[in-house]
Length: 168
Image (cartoon, rainbow, N blue to C red):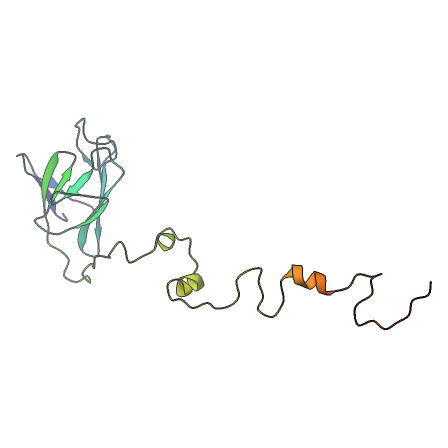
């Protein structure tokens, strides 16, 4: 057993018997809470790096850790977790052999990077004010196409520096 959820309203403790547990109202959930305010698939509890983590699965009534609504949260021994209005205290011993979990500041990573839409070379340029070259469609060595086209005489036109004599 990897820990247990102790109901704060009374009742038998719920064993946390495997490292990944689905909490919800459906019969296929590992921890079934058959209450109307619990979503069919409410939350995922997962043991990661020796600590339990809770990930809300877009439930209607939310998941709270120590009274704060979370989408993802790390649970420390003795913390309170609530699925809708069903409150529990989590009881477990963290694995001391695993490197402790460091919480990441959610604002330290850009949205594009979180979504996996930003390439590595772009992430190095963004926010540093340095440009690694000209922007697309522009060249530092060439004049814009509107000027280049005016500077070249057309086939039957004379240029200003043309000294040839035309036969009439």
